[in-house]
View 1 (cartoon, rainbow, N blue to C red):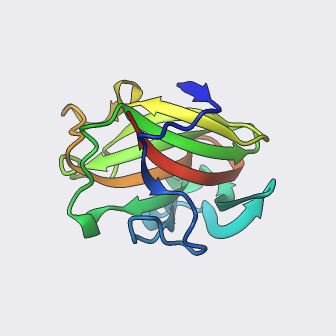
View 2 (tube, rainbow, N blue to C red):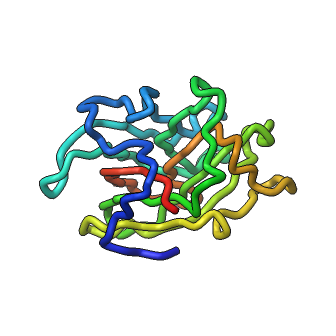
Length: 178
């Protein structure tokens, strides 16, 4: 994971929060998903707000491990685009602010057919706005043997996962960088 305070002009913006609602720049709406879809008891909320003077999406919730649970997620389904082609880029760039906890970026592709399959990278969301770069080479397969197909991304998820904690993640921008 690389962190930087400089945004690259060659970025492809996925969401810069200019919509004022839950829609991304791609016209697709962010939604919250929790382990409740699998019988877990974690609960999350997703709202548009301002944090430290900046418009953002804020994912909050209680990640709980009962009933084999353990996640809350802000997800952006790219199915409306068929797929997002990221093959001309180096990785994801996120502007984030949080509660000094570790979070994950999960990516699903046309190859991830089972719900627990994804490609993942972790990052810490500090209490100050920061730019986090997650190069594709650091986004690792989870429960799948197929290499990450950058030409066929079908979901991006920002996830609080794996341990009991209170999630609070603000996202001001999601982009692909060169």
